[in-house]
Image 1: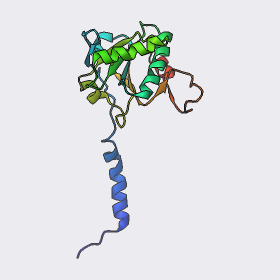
Image 2: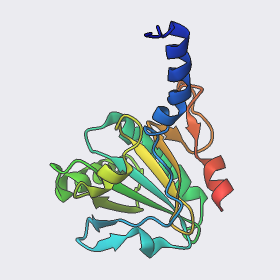
Image 3: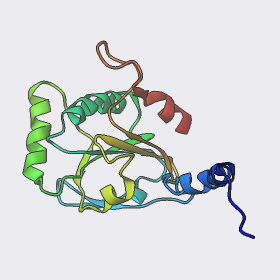
Image 4: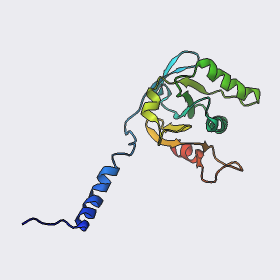
Length: 183
């Protein structure tokens, strides 16, 4: 005798399986210390581990990205409001086609308008982006590592320092509370 399966059985089975399947697509936060390396604009290889003891903001961007330009202004506010002993910003250009000269020109354009971007800039060989890209892979993208080098926060899209400027969407992520919580 063949038993006919009811649609209810199928629905219940799918509901039981849903948590197992949906958990496979989440990006897990690494419970142990992370590390990566990048090349600074002066050609020096640096590692995330060089900054242990500080909260590190990894800013993944590209020169052609308009929201990334706005993100630079917000990162500048963070740079001005937190001690170098506490917070370090690493802005890593993830477009492997871009040159150091293009990045320096990008920084110079901000300086021409009175906005100095004096934190650490570097280039990615593809490994940082592959490991830390956030969400659907849009930029700007931020990853914040705690003082022990553990990834503690990640965000895709523009995020503001603290106050949301007039004309910006009201639901933008504010970074100051995240940083304050890690300090």
